[in-house]
Length: 373
Ligand code: KIV
Ligand code: ZN
Image 1 (cartoon, rainbow, N blue to C red):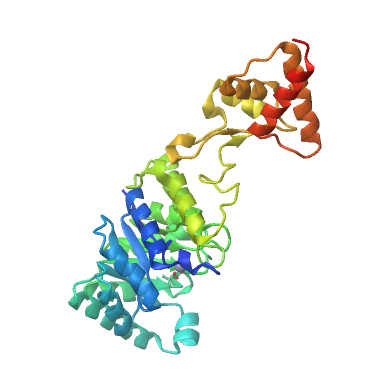
Image 2 (cartoon, protein in one colour):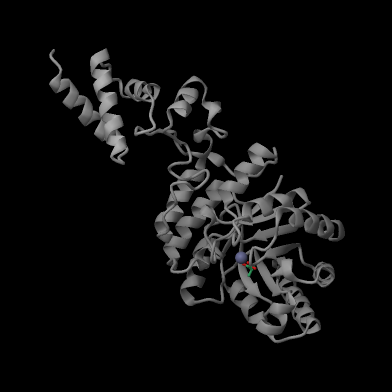
């Protein structure tokens, strides 16, 4: 069983141009809880008054999921998180020399001390602590492991390796997690970004290497090219790796649409699992195979993720697809009518059009109008 920390409301909300009000945050959090995520990163309490209102609205709901706030290794951040009554903090410390030197303008020793002081402070205040190494995949691994080990000694409940700028490869991810998980006594989590389009693959490799939790967002939204997408990782785990999560997969499509609507980020049609084309079929050969047995061209049953099969009529369609559609619509045509309808579909397809169900009904009516009764 792999645990899911959903960061749609924190890293996802960092998508350029996105800002949710407290009601919208709450609406998404309720959906995420219902979906079955184990931990909801509800936001970053230090950010603003509105952000704190949103986090408080979420923590007052009594959801099943653990609710955490993102914090830096600073008591002021932890105090704001406490004010929001969260269960825990996602306590983030930059660990690469690039970040330590140029962003924090500190030394490794100073960074380590800040991290440990912050973990102790959060634990003294009764919080669950997930200690994250920011830019961990460009850090010195010995320093990273030292920080994690010392963090665990002072009470960190989990640690997380962040591939902040998405530079992992699946091979490196596996090796890195194998090593870290072999040395750390608490659950290790993975947080991947998609700069090279490999966030899902890297997350899966980290899990193969021993990670017990992964950070994901709905629709893969997040900073720059986004985060590892929840629906992709979960379905790959369930179907390709036979590893379970607590996600109720049949709710994925609905949650994807709620997040898309509230964040005003359209879901690309070809988005795996939740895109409108993810289960759409047009090519004659495909539709013919599919009609005989869905598994020919559907590695995932669409109903398993709450999506639906779409048979598209257009230039690539075969007669089997048209017959399938007509059967679904309960329409029966004479042989001559059928041939005419099919020809019109092909002609329209050649003009670059695809035929919606409404178009098809119009074509049928026209053809019937032309045919002698
Ligand atoms: O990508 C990242 O490193 C993060 C951390 C700040 C947790 O989102
Ligand atoms: Zn991130």
